[in-house]
Amino acid sequence: MPNQLGKRFKCEVCGTEVLCVKAGEGSVVCCDKEMVLQKPRPLPSSD
Image 1 (cartoon, rainbow, N blue to C red):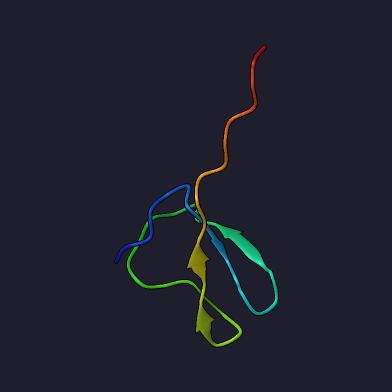
Image 2: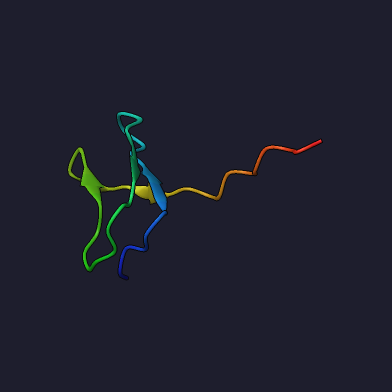
């Protein structure tokens, strides 16, 4: 699956977080394991 611009990934071993700034093929790897795609963060309220 290609990496998409703006997606965040997290390493379950060391806790490192990565933001994809350039789309492309391949997978994001840290500590010899694929990083997990994180869910979108909610936008702050403008109240």
